[in-house]
Image 1: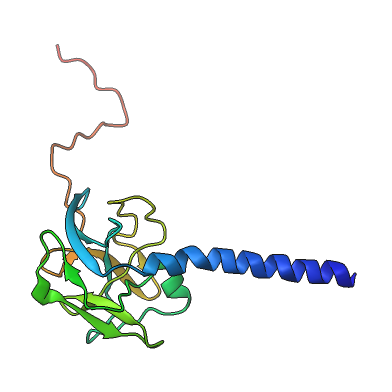
Image 2: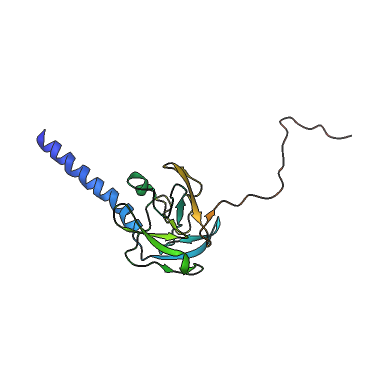
Length: 167
């Protein structure tokens, strides 16, 4: 019984450490922010090409996302001054100190995050999600929220009954 308990503790600890590693490594970048075209239009991305998001709950340039929130929405951290890639205004890039003392990259005074379910470059699965008390939006070159473009075109309504032919 004691051996089984020890084995479960070791396996559980290893699983916890393994699960925590991807989230932690996803937050660390070289601090380069660029602009790329996605299905939402032009949005900011980190050095790995992952979409950057703003949390509408953040106020005064400070992050309101920690603990469980930060595991789903990893903050973009950079120990050095962030650099502006293609299409990004360097004057809008800065950093803010998080509650744990790490430095988070900001753009137009908005702390930046990635989304844990965006696995590939340019994915925008986090757009418009409401989680941890507020909405999440991708960030534009101006440092404002990008929202999905409205679909335009002709709408056809099909009636629930057959239409008789005209004589």
